[in-house]
Length: 432
Image 1 (spheres, helix red, strand yellow):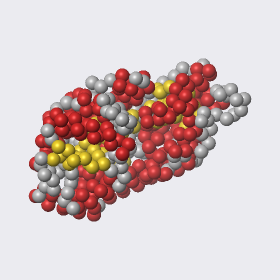
Image 2 (image 1 turned 90 degrees about the vertical axis):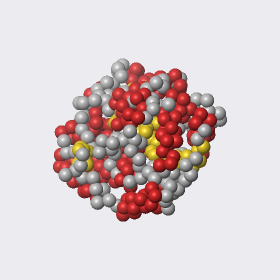
Image 3 (image 1 turned 180 degrees about the horizontal axis):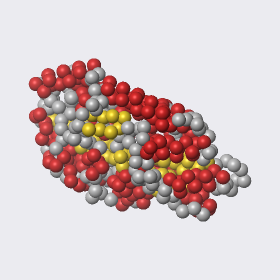
Image 4 (image 1 turned 60 degrees about the horizontal axis):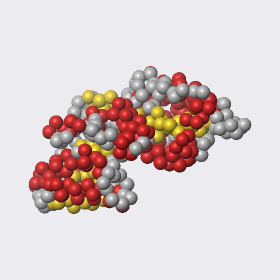
């Protein structure tokens, strides 16, 4: 059963289709950015207009974006195109405001990474957005500590465990004190951090959060694969190879632990490169592909996508052209800041276009590691209508499991599955 908001918006949509809110000679684009990215997105829009003659009215909002969009739908004034988090697709699709995308007819679509398109596919097998920016998670390691202690780069979970143990017990900073730790783990239940962090380990072990079919989703955490991921994380915590406050740490708490040299291993994204180059120092760190679990070296993929909204048939052709420009080589390069004047931030972190050499653009091999991880091991969260409550349910459950060294993990995972299935039923997407 859909929420009242979704029902209201779906009812409003029929009126929107009957009377488009905007003129067909101007493309109305809403983007989830702020002033820090304004220069970059405005440069992209201007170049698109120069090449096509299509005018673009751009609206930026970095907060309350979903609320603004809901109000727009209710007032029958939906924009033509929305640029926002890829994870918003499920909710917008459930609201009934997205146009389907035929990926095979998208000019330049074949140049995109397969994983990028997979992130835009709903459980019904259809695509409802075009990806244009991505990021994946890799592992930061204190290279100077690792080399001092005589360890190779970790390639497996066993290697990672041994390195975390060594960083904790073998005085890698030569202080003569027991003042370092191995793996920095943000396992707080706050805002879903435990679920966010554990996702990599679950996928690496061969597990999944949800199974799906043409009818919807079902929770799938109570499996030996997910249990092995929990056991691995629990072992790090209970044996003292994670930072002492791991169970209550958010990334805001965890990042300074790595920055300040208290621990030597941290899973994060490319957005931390500049910070870690400053402290502990570019020469002291390395970025590696996540060590392989029982199944793979998968890690979370996230990103931004472009969505065409329903009810604006008069601008569909221009909307298609705009999306195609975003994913073109020129659009991607501009999104990464190439040729953009001023100090505006990029709107493309990792390119979704296989023809873009990320390492050359950023002149940094560590960016190539993230790009490789995205292409070969990136996994998106399932495209349910609203992932946030499921993330919180699983986070609460994972945090309880990892807070005790004697938890019955199997029973706990069954309880989490039950709670997740209830939420899926509430969202109207529980598979029969």
